[in-house]
Structure formats: structure tokens, C-alpha cells
Image 1 (cartoon, rainbow, N blue to C red):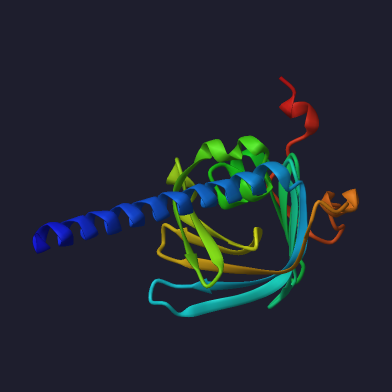
Image 2 (tube, rainbow, N blue to C red):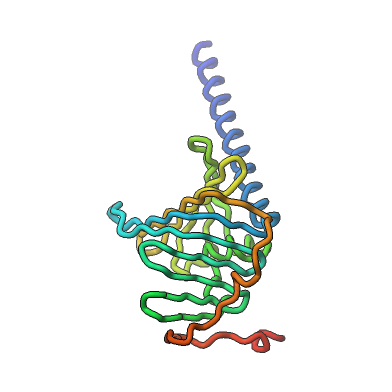
Length: 219
């Protein structure tokens, strides 16, 4: 009889754990889906840390982030050096202010299967990722997403949502490096000046790469 009771308790506990995990996964999927489909603009501050394979912090940076879907965003790094990363819908412009160098790449190629696609892409960006579970830690729901194609250099990413808002991001690359991003003072679905997503080539800077023109993307 005791063995039957213990077996029943064990099965009930396993069932409860499985149900809780399934419920947690459902919440995680819903949070990501809501972020991709319903957040049109996002702006705030960020602090970023790059951690090597041995767990050492090799770089810290900070700045501001602005996103406007579909396909436009601006990462403005202020520390440790000034750098802009601007996506205008056709190209991604990376401007190193100290080096006076601009690198440009076609946006569609540069963002494919990367975390930036999920953050600033259209609502079909989810089709390029696989949901891999979620968990809750200290009030933050962590959702793991894996790109279907890992040739972009990223193995997976984890998005952290607190009270339904995106507050943390962790990116894992193929070199066993981890990038941690913490977001602060975030506002969503507020207007952002369209000029923030336009890049004007500085006269004294060198250009690496060839930008895509609008007519080049016409079917």
C-alpha cells in the first residue's frame, strides 16, 4: 500500500511539474509573440557586456537603442567609444567615430538569422527561429530562441521579460562568447523621429562596402 501511495505521489508530482513547465512555455511563447507582433517602436538605454569562453568580461559598453518596425533601428554606443549602428530598411551602416570609418552592408543579408532580425524585423521574423523553452528566475521570464540557420554565427539567444516588458537579452555565439544586454528606461510604441534611422555619410570618413539602392530591391 505504501509503495502504491509513494508511486501515486511521484506520478502526481511529475505531472504537476510537466504541467507547470508547459504553462511556463506557453507564457514564454506568448511574450515573444506579443513583442514581435505588437511592439512597433522601442527606445531606451542599454548596458552591454561581452564575456569570453572562460567567463571573463572582456568588454563593457553602453548607449541608447531605438527600434521602429519593420526593419529600422539605431544602436548608439557612447562608451567605451562612440559608434553608431543604423539600419534604414535597406542597409546597415556602422560608423566608428574615432576611426572615421563607415562600413555598409545590405540589410537583408546582414540580419538573416541574427538576433537583430527578431528585435527589429517584421512579424514574420519568428519563422527563422525555433522556440526552445522558458523559465522564470527572480521575477523575470527567460525565453530561449534558436535560429534555424546558425551560419550567422549565433547559436541561440535568451530574452528576459519582466512584468511583460523586454528588459534583458543574452546572445551566445559560435566562438563560445556571450553578450549580455540590460535595458533601462524602456518605452514602447511612442513616436521616434524618422531622421534617427537615416544615415548621412560624413565627408571626412572612409566608406567600406557598397550600399544597396531602393531600385535594386524592386522585383
